[in-house]
Length: 526
Image (cartoon, rainbow, N blue to C red):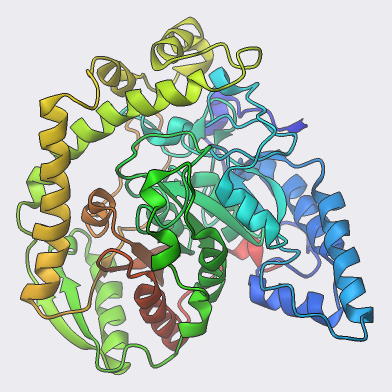
């Protein structure tokens, strides 16, 4: 295992903007569909692409801290993909194509288990020895499609649930992840390294996870496409949990087409995850097949005015996005307010803390006791206190301590909070707005541009109201590059009802193709 050491604390406080690195061959800002075309044609090999990404990780990761560990078997896996591709080229019967992900090197957020010789740490030193020797089902699906697991991506420690005063993108294992558009600024979180790595050309794509904003926020401010699927479309088995009600994995890519291709493989039922019982019946066999540049024509689009108005410059970019939607034939309908919006958060917190304790205890109890000494949330709290000089130099663990005091899934207060939150966010929220305004989808700015990394004042983001209800309701949320503010990316959110991924991807694709708003960071185009 090749594990990358954590940043020194001083490096968090002051770091100059990234200098442009020496040119790197091919791959840097190509989409997976472009790379796959080169593989099919024999212009490049999976090994060449994998080695190029590994070289770029060596070059940039000491500053970006986007990758926690690289897979020592990545090149061997790529060689295996090349062997299969060579057989296919030589086959007289022209074997069927292996699919759009075959041979593609991707990063996995380090709260998702893989069978490779890399620990699954969730960024915590308490899980530094957590080598499980197994793939989470979502990773097994990707590997079966020919994906090369390149390594593990850094994240906000414990997926940003340890403290409400945390610093996004920091973990004790991986250090402080940095935004490739400006190294003094945040990557958001918790899928911080996943976003920074793909934006900077360290991988073809990445898998992130979200409970509330952890895919869509980092995707938006790193200039990427990010999809938080419907809860239950993608398996959560062998992913370090926060909330059974809200957790999901999802793709983070440079294009909507790549996201659609990843979701096609990732989606599906898992007998070990009861939430996915409907996934096989609800998923599309090919999300990419439905992508059309004219998908917005005649579509009634609800404009989330309640999620805008927080930042003048972002609002200006949003208005340009709305004009582009209208030019594509969309019918725009203002949605001025979201009913009971302010009441969702307090109920959500009760749900997250209660489910965190239950899920964490179950996960830790199932780890190898020879590798993971912490067997419960209480043990992790004690570990952090005993290792405060490494774990709690920047923020504490008050959310963990609050979660430890919860009394389980039969607590009437928890049950009421769960039911109220789901109702207010879903049936009485998103569903009601879609019906009231006779619209098919809601759009709004995902949030404002990236903020300065500040260990004293912590995260100081603006906006972020577009996706909260979707997270709480368990509904899908897609963000697509909307433009830039002062050279920093901002995203456009598409939110729809449960199981509406195909429609959201279609609308996002039409907007993307019409506007081409993604601009890679300067370091990624050389």
